[in-house]
Length: 81
Image (cartoon, rainbow, N blue to C red; front, side, top):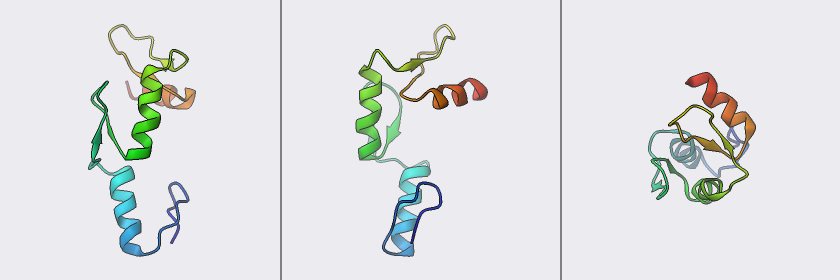
């Protein structure tokens, strides 16, 4: 069964449900030690790299501190804020 959100292939409906809950739900098992984010294991590794990377995209709003590895994510941040 393929996840329609990221094309991850799961072996059963139960594993697909768990994948969606962990990847896209509010229950993420790991927390970033550099900020308040919580993510899956692989996402956390990428996230920590962006927190330490001076080339990451940063929000220009004073006091915000939001950074992103992708420009699209920064643009989505601006729309939310």
